[in-house]
Length: 190
Image 1 (cartoon, rainbow, N blue to C red):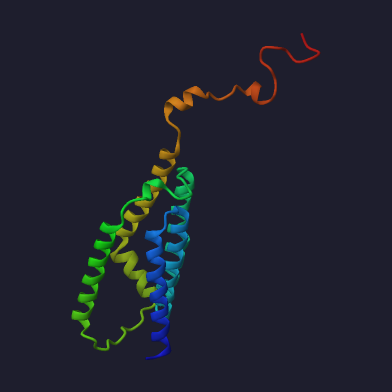
Image 2: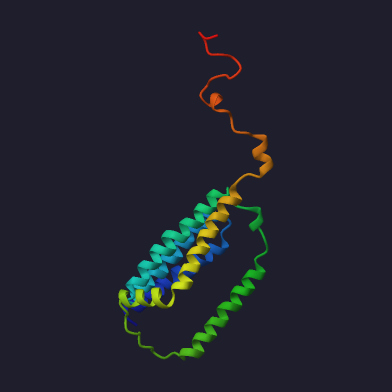
């Protein structure tokens, strides 16, 4: 067992533990911060596997953009920051599904690799990866960007008050905003 293997085990444990905290916490903002820790541990695993470009893309896109977008949407929609009564449900169904998925993945990996050593593939260059993404995968790349834009627009629209609430609180006229009473003329005038 090499030092890289030990670090991979530690980062895997951090990723699994913080991932469990993402789904078990009742605070939305804390769940977002635990997600940052999870994605950071995955980026560290990519660094150890000599995939530096993928690690930095992970940090920039997921940690830097998606989590910030998630927290921005929470703040924009005025969602409750503290513990939510909506999240106070029995966890047995989720635990059952998660345990089943974990056991299924474990069986899949054990059957697929049968405890054999697997050589790491050759590391690709950033130029090769960019060529593959922007030549062969440009349509899914653009669809994801449109989807994120639609999610942001949806968050802005859903955070606006209903039409009836805006009619009750009309915008003040410009004179009232400047401190001038539109009924009474200013002092010294007629």
